[in-house]
Image (cartoon, rainbow, N blue to C red; front, side, top):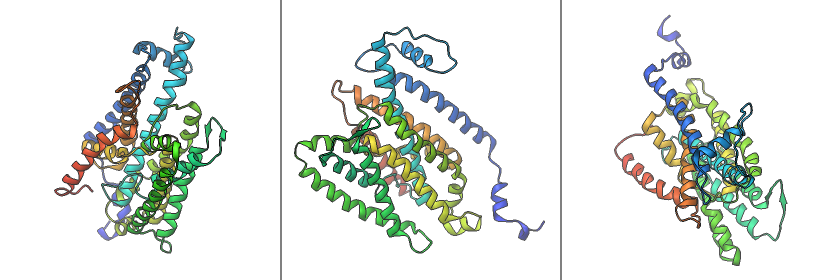
Length: 363
């Protein structure tokens, strides 16, 4: 076979993976999964009411199918674990995984190391929807939650749809135009939100607390609503991990290697937006997770998206569960908005990235 007979796509598919590095990443995924289970148990055990870790772990095991263990806890303690703490921890893990994965996908899609899940107006659209929900004189409750999460989710989706329609040129979607449209529309939504906050009167405190993010009063009904969106979005993004690797070259080369660039951009944009909108609709806009976690993973395990994406999912879940644990225990009984905790961790790291970007190329 001559060199002219070799197709680029076959050359990429036949590229070997360095086995020791591949094995190390697989072990890392398994280790992070075990660590996530331990973090869930620890975060569920710690709170205003002291419950021993082993007792909490036994209670969690007793809920698993095919496990014949009795927790031996009182009904009050069982309620604290299963109805108050565990749904909060699970929701924090889901949101952390969604934001970290969406951040990694946006960074690969835009080939920009400073991209985050809120780059194209998701956060601003969700904030506008939520603020409108706070102000409207409607006290509707259905499926275990009120109108605010519904309007926040709708605001996020509508905002991205507007940005997409503004940025699309024929059958192509220029990344630069998409980002500029997102920034401009986000600024518009932000100004409207600021005006509504000023005129909201006694509802201002609740609005500001939502905007800074909080997992307070999390319920299983919220977990059940968020879970399907995040599972589907995560699965779709993971399927396109190889395409993200190829797209780090440039769009022309990716097209030559057999990637339908415009289709991949649309699918990844839709999936990342879906999981981000679902994540922020109940807990508010939590910043820096989508920048901090993917880059930490990239610095430790490398830029291969086949491993970067699942490692980001697990690391994001662990990070936000621990951040929420600090938020509810550091100044107990007062609860710190979780956005404050993630900003304290994320802002210095963001500045480090800006400094590092002067010397090295990330992609």
